[in-house]
Image (cartoon, rainbow, N blue to C red; front, top):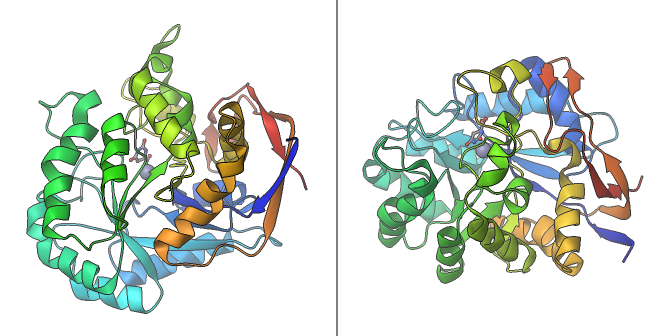
Length: 344
Ligand code: DOR
Ligand code: ZN
């Protein structure tokens, strides 16, 4: 197959930041995707429907003319989240979902949740109104090895939480382990997962190939090869509860190439091309549309996009650096190329 036309995809997990960075990165996503779930981890985080509504306006203002792109907003859950604000924001169409960061798990998560158990009243309300909870699934205790944090989260936090809220819609974001794959497969139809292209393409050894490669550092960190293979297999399988979420997370180069570099991979510019390459390598191009364009909307209770995109076999070269108004960024696979491209 050398040409593939599919329903326009959506990105179910995306960071676009704010200000000049937002204006620089939104066009990359709007070029290919119809919608994206926007992460709320700004400083300060998006914790009210008024903040979400004005953030949505700033994103819309950065969408290039001619692109039909809709940002889907999320609320940042804190220990003090007000269930009435969530419910009102959901009813008014401002919030699509709520994001749970365990406190200090990752970039701008200092205001995250310190004890998930105390949020049971909020989770009950969300289950009642069908509002999904999107989870950064890592424990944060310093005594848990960084490569075990997802699996430990699933066992010690997520399984008990779903036990207490069996009807809550949950998306386990950017899964990286075979334990996450198994957990999602064995859960009910209210539990799904997003998968990034980088977690299908790199393992933890790649982060240290020939030296330390800060641009491959993200959280959850890539795991050993057996986990990459499990995540990749799940993604290309066509299973309806795995879908596309890039976790594209731009940081200026100085923040990545530093004695204490930030977590985050900027993969938005060539996202759908990279996924197409993975599905092609696995002989599963037939499942790309389900993963990228159909499974996500079905889970969220939305219609698929009406427009289509066409991918064709052919080179997409990825620049070494992007000089953007928001700063200089080194994109995922900088200086390399992909063998699929978007046809105009
Ligand atoms: O690598 C990451 N970067 N993981 C996250 O969870 C947050 C993100 C960011 O905002 O930079
Ligand atoms: Zn993220």
